[in-house]
Image 1 (cartoon, rainbow, N blue to C red):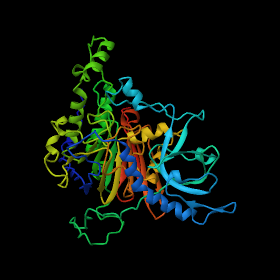
Image 2 (cartoon, helix red, strand yellow):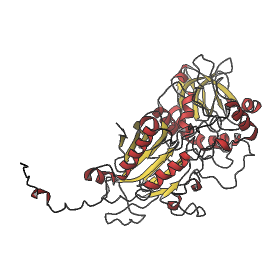
Image 3 (cartoon, one colour):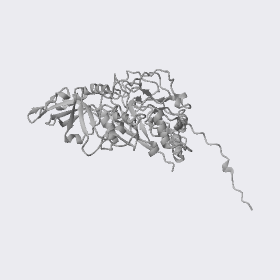
Image 4 (cartoon, helix red, strand yellow):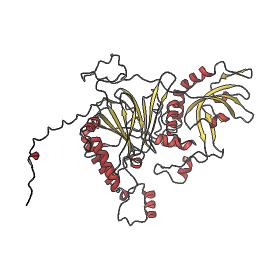
Length: 503
């Protein structure tokens, strides 16, 4: 006999539909600090960049040095300031400001590269220029000449080519400058929050520009900015494709419950910081000999048969899925389809047939309203929710890393802030455009947030300046290696690391 069960409990009214959270608006103003003119010339000399940098930063470092060393007396001798490196006299206690040059035997030489026909593409190398055998030399130079720096103090302070410093000491009998103390320009003046854009009021409308705005929590509080780097789309790894899909669903809130969806809706902008497309993917059924490929590329400069369109198509699809929900800022990286030299210009929207509808008009002026999909330079500067943000795709820190013994990426980022230069090694070992009238890598204003993409691991800290400046440093890990990205709270500037795991 079959037992009948009571099924009346199944006849229930449908549950009320869940209200879909609305994505929080983003207050965003790009500054276009690193945009190049359309008419670009590489005929000029690179040496002018060093003179421009020294002219801009030298007054700041001399001011710091003057406050520290004026009236300093050692052994009955008063330290005096000299204007030029060649004005240093043997046995006299003095201080002078100039540009650092690192003479390192492992550092690449452009003249040697040209002579060996190795100049067709930008090299990507992870080796160190630093050597611990004592062969590296530190020079200080200006438009008058160059002097070698020596002293135990230099072993504890990391220096790279292109940074501007002031040193106090005396010249010895060998013509070397023995350093007793060293000063850097330190953090530049920091603008107030909402210095450029208008702060939203409680009603959602903008306050007038002359309104005094404090850093108290916004009525709309809880906004966050997501930063991810090193997506490295290739289409060759099924397990990694799954993790990319999980990242997509997380940002869209599709794989989360109602409470988590409300939290995700507070992410007002996504920043993609470099290396979005992988260059390691290989084509299947490729029987051509590798040596033949290399000879063809060396002869013709570009091998069209080696181009694989799949990574860029997958990346375009990823971005197009997100854009209806969240605005995106895209920085190029070392492996992306953009110019190799610093500052990298925006990836052309022609690379994004599905996503470019959300971008601004290519013919519009730089002062016009940015598009929902904003392809920007690397480095890049903007004001987001009133905070001054500086970000890069990572090449500047990766290059500084080669000069020093340390592996502390945050320490290198802090040093660049205190040197007031976000790419000090350009144009020596970091390929750069030969600027003639201005060096955009000089930090005229101190950012509130400084992030660097494509780093080996996540790290963050806050540094402070002599005049109350405060900078949040963020090393953003490569997503393809760590499966991690970060969220930055736009009220407290606290940083949260998010890890995506498929199992």
